[in-house]
Structures are given as C-alpha cells and as structure tokens.
Image (cartoon, rainbow, N blue to C red; front, side):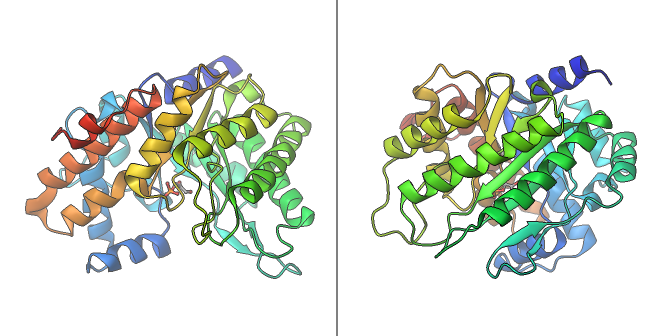
Length: 340
Ligand code: 13P
C-alpha cells in the first residue's frame, strides 16, 4: 500500500456526510453494556448484537467505517458470512482496535498508560489479511489534582506514535485517539489546557516518528466541562473552545478529525458536532467516531430480543442520520423529532 492509498482510505472514512461507528468494546466493556440490559455476555450474544448493528438497510449512507474488536473481526453472521464481508459488501470499511487497554502507570497513581505494542507488527499483518484497512489505539488522560503529569502525557504520546508508524507500515490508516476524560469536576478551561498540551505532544511524536499526517485521522475528545462541574459550558462554548484547540494543534495535512463521544448523551454529542461544523469551513473534515452516542438507543431497544432487531436498527439509523447531518452543520430539532 502506498501513501496515496493510505490517504485515499483516510479521506473515504471522512467523506462528506459520513462518520465511523465504534463497535470495538473489549470483553469487559461489552459485559458492562450487556449487564445494563440484563443479558449475559456470551460469544453468540455479542455476535448477534454486532450483526444487528452492521445490517440496517442503507447504513452506508451515513457510516463509512466500523471499528471492530479482535473477536468480532473473526466472527461470522448467522448465515455464515464473515462480519467483515457483511460490512465490505455495503461499502463500509472494517477497522480494528489494536491496543490492549489502558493500565495503571507504574509510579504515577491515578494515571494510565496504554499497552499493546509488543508483537504489534505481526498482529497488523494478520488484521490486514482479515480485511481491516484502519486501526485504532486509545490513550486515556485523566484530569485531577496535579494530574496529568508530563511523564504520563509523553509516555502515551510516544506509544500512540509507535502504534501509528506500525499501522501505516502495514497499510492501515491509524486512528490516533488521545482521550482526555470528562470524569471529574474540572472546568472547560482546564479541559482546554490539558487537551491542547496533549495534542501538541502527540503531534510532536507523530512527526518525530515519521508518521504521514495525510494518511491518519485524529480521534480527540471535545473540549467540554467535567461531568461534575457545577458550571456546564453551553454547546456554543464547547464548539468554540474545541475549534480553538484543534486550530492550534492539528496540521491541515491531516484529512480528518473524528470525535469520540466519551460519555456525552447521544443528542448532546450530535448537537455539539453540529455546532462545531457550523463554525466552518475548517481545514479538516470534522466528523464522528461514536460508540455509546450511536449505540445506546439501539442497545436499549434490542435488549437481546431477536424480535426487536428491526426497531433497534431503526434507532441506530436515526442516530447515524442525525450525526451525518451534523457532519455538515445541518442538524435540526425537526430532524431529531422525525421518525426516520
Ligand atoms: P465513545 O464514543 O463511547 O466514547 O467510544 C468511542 C471509542 O471508540 C472510545 O475508544
């Protein structure tokens, strides 16, 4: 794969009106999600759930790619078709989460470092053969008293760049995800300060480690008030602070920025994306790579009942359509209230 092909894949992931469905929950996370709807996290339930998510009619109008978990990239639909093939037939690009999770960082209480670099070159080779054309690695940055430390930010930025270089070498587009968590009572200003520093350090490492900016995507948090902050910033304030930060840190050579939802409500995540795009035009395509904000309504509707698949798929399509509109700053209350 040449750098032109990487750039073409990156650009198709952020094609106008399209975004990414993150369905790469690890075994622990999906178990937590299933517990909330009272179903056991068996391999077959996980397959049935993911098959439901990947097969609403017309999904590819709004969704360019899906991030898969290691188990899912090997699973087959009920009719025996590999799930990657189910996606590819619709023109949806399969992607793969390759990190092995954020673990406590030795010597730095309350902070995390993402693991998974060992053996990654060989894993990428296999994932490419299995059909993945992009990867994802998530770093987790926590805001608290005296944290994050520079040591934690630098270690995570270094690992993100090591991953991104290996990802491009294997012919996959790296999605680089440094997530500053919204847990805590910090203000939006504090989130802005930490997000800006994080992204500066990440791009410095990407540059030093010779990652081609044209063949990658950034998956950041929005600049937003901490969940428990008494003074919650408005949608407009979130949009302005987020764009200010991105303009200071992300080179225009990067084709696209795809936000995580990070615990925002699903409608809130759509409204914020819409407000961000209304501030455009921007030097990059700005879209979504949501997990919870795309899946929550569908998960609750499905609740493990095969008879609820059509209604759950409708719920997912609706959220995908609303976020697609927000990708071009054309989301509205009427669209939200509409039944399609
Ligand atoms: P959320 O949108 O639920 O934050 O998930 C996105 C994701 O892929 C986190 O790594």
